Image (cartoon, rainbow over all chains, first blue to last red; front, side):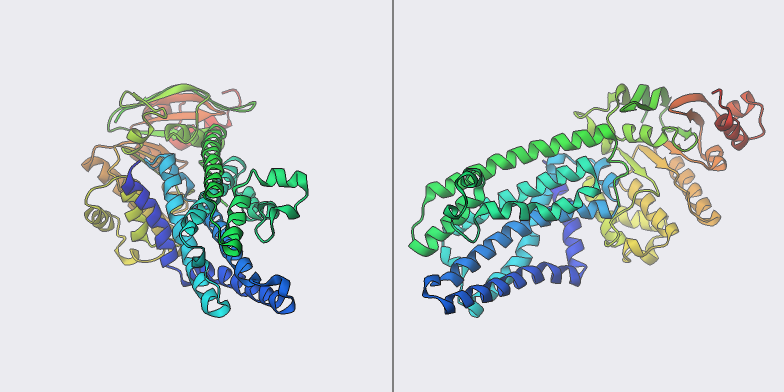
Length: 263
Length: 242
């Protein structure tokens, strides 16, 4: 892989973000709204019942982590969609760049976009609700990395769909994470799901990540085996995502859709 | 660079878009790819750019087969411009040129951009967003992008479509001059027959995915007994037996 070509592709998206204040505002706006919404809802629960002690911390931490996953996946999709919307697809695919360089550039730039939105939101939660995601401590790095890999994987699968089915697949890009959210056990423990759904849910890294987050915040226990398990599952999905992306690209070349893809 | 196309076929399910075409462009020559809409020109160019996988047949560039293993190496010496594809609209002209210069591994990027800006009169809108340009300005920027890596093989798909006669003439004149000053082989797909007569050393006429004639402009015009290339094009396009 050529790092200067990866940098050039990253630069294209950095210029895009840098050149538009509404775009930056949009990146910050939604995560902040999420924090406010979940912060007030969980604060209400805490005030109404002693059963929900520490609810604000757990729900808000879950909201921040879920938003991190959501933003990383959406950022990935958005950057790919930008190429379709701007009709730049042909220019990009006739440039001497490898598919792996495109994937790497999207992966690196997605973290940049995600952090623009999430860092301010996470900081706002500290004075406003007395909740700091950083209380999770050192394992937070692993949880975020695992979530990021899974977010990028979902991004890869959606972009593979865009290559396969064209811009009409765009709606799936927005819906993909909402489909997985109920199974991810983000705001509730795994036991809430019916047994047969628990089996399916365990195949997702999300369950292991959010169960571990609750373990740390409620019981102050770190289960590195669970974190490792989540990372491995994420990596498996990531490899599958890459294979599907290459397969879709090859299919798009066979169908001739790369040459005139655009809105 | 020499381009050789051998027995190229592209089928989309039951539809044969390109049906066993073969031709070559010698080094530093320009070939016009002509034919009515839907005759397979864009599909053929797509295959030559490595964007579409041929059903069968081969493409050689300077004797090297265009396949996934050689794609990156060959693409770095090629480029393409078409009014039907665009550069990111929210980026300025300078940013777009910089990004493509980096993607093509151009050395001394600032110097090369400055050169293109001077040659194609881009100075007045260099820092303007590409989406805010007129079609004539966009066309020149697109041409600048296609020449940013000093390609030795350039594909142009209707480079002067939708341009007023003045800018159209500017583009043709620039291409002629650029070709004289640089080592460049060109494939030009165009519906402007005067443009083809002016810029091309030879032409390939396509119809329904097949090559129906090829030769120099003069040879083809004489063979069909017409006054000029436009009349010849009309005769071929309207003749249902071919």
